[in-house]
Image (cartoon, rainbow, N blue to C red):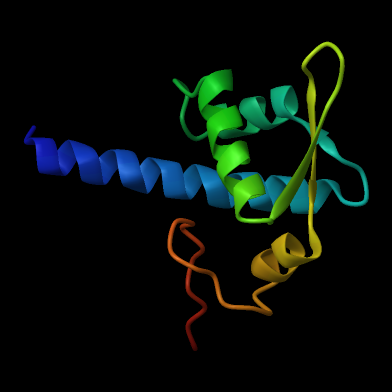
Length: 107
């Protein structure tokens, strides 16, 4: 595979994982979700996904102020959506590039 194709596939994977993380955390509301539980969900789509990969994408979502992460003394991550994260999942605001949110089309 060419470098360009590999780069594109890696980007698509990252963006889809971010969307799946947002959706999963949304479904758990009002409870938070631990990153270990999120890993199991993501592995249903990407069986080779790692805990480090999930944390990297959660960190990205936190930087975008879509997710709030609480880190405890034993380094467990508990994740909740911010109000902006809820709005992105509910399609009430625009979604900036970097997250593979499906477009809503008219039937």
